[in-house]
Length: 366
Image 1: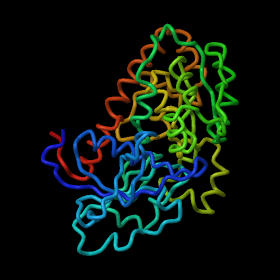
Image 2 (image 1 turned 60 degrees about the horizontal axis):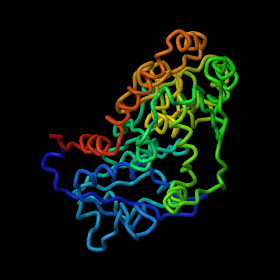
Image 3 (image 1 turned 30 degrees about the vertical axis):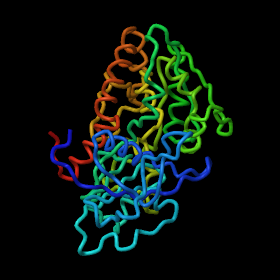
Image 4 (image 1 turned 60 degrees about the vertical axis):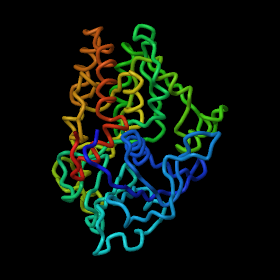
């Protein structure tokens, strides 16, 4: 539990939108769920994230009597800026007594690298690479697990009851997925047949609860998808872009000179924009996630999973070696299924996420 933390936290939230433009603020939802479980008070500029279809109850609640200046921490997230909102008025005023925190999860966001974001006391950014240089206030963060995901993966079959196949359901054509589709998937399917089942964006769930979550998550909640995860041994969770290893500047990919010189580098080894919803959903479901080798390609997290213990990370220079190991060690997938899930719950469920957040801003953990 948090020791001697009696302060208040203020969140700036976007309103709930339509399913195709929902403004799903996953990072602050996970954080708030953990804070609430720890008994920590937090407020927001408006109500956000309904907890039930039957009641007008929200995780984030607006109280007109509480302003940011009444709180010790003020939090914004990247969707605030992606939806065209300016910085809240007087956010960085000289007499403020609160700590400012910015959370950035989405691969389409890169606001954290802009000079004005150095005004934040703390920036928590997903999609980081350990070999790149970031502003001094920037620290790696993760998508992590929400209560919604944990509820969908709470009851699981034994590993022996699962179907021995690899789920592959890519919607966005990242370059890493194209490489994997050409060089890895055709070779693994002799060991793990591929299941390409998917759910249409426009096919919404019919139960009130599932429809609420489908709406709030921007069409990212499908009961049949979670059923496939629970019933399968493995899931392809690849994503991201490989960039040249000769730069250490996280801002470089936005520059024209970088894009020109990048075409001359034939062996890119730095993975960016790599975070994957499926990676966390699969871990929670005990469905072994396949991604690139985080250590080799520099993918950075607050707590990094161990390859071949918590997930299977593929080395694109030694694909056959990975396939041979899976074939030669029949007990391997079951072991990773168990240990990967336990690791994710230990470090990335809502409570440890909230504890890590408070530690980052200097509050001790008892």
